[in-house]
Image (cartoon, rainbow, N blue to C red; front, top):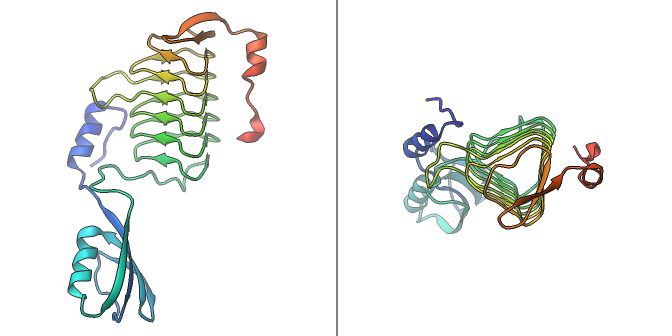
Length: 235
């Protein structure tokens, strides 16, 4: 079944209906013959094997072969997970190690996703946009083209509590480090959000906002543009 990850109710339906997953990796030392189980992916020989599969299948395999297994070790990085990670191989972008990007995310051409960034289901990242270290984009957040989302900043999601309006960050916006954009807020094209600000109201295009809560302090001028210039060579 195909889902529309732009729609709040469709995402809820997806999470409700999908089979929850606890994938594990098992390192096994034992006198095993070839493993004949279509639910398990395995590699190895000469008494050392690495198995990949769901916990329910791996655990049954270990129990059923306990007489010939000397020892084993299990590794898992999630439990009853409802949303798989996005397959990033086909994406024409730069994605650094440690980024967590869930299924249903769209990433534009030449975008940059830095270490530790977290991007939730249904979010959209525009062309040439940079998501800096440890930034968080909640479910269905819409980030335009040539946006810089500063390190540690947060774009609030809209799954729980429920809201039908996602955050929208228009093109050419700069959001400073550790800024927070609350649910349903729209940041207009070319605006600048100062570091550490908390944005509780929509921001018009072409202005600079700062503070808690963020307020307009000036229009974007030549000096501001010089400090917020993008570097194409990073893309």
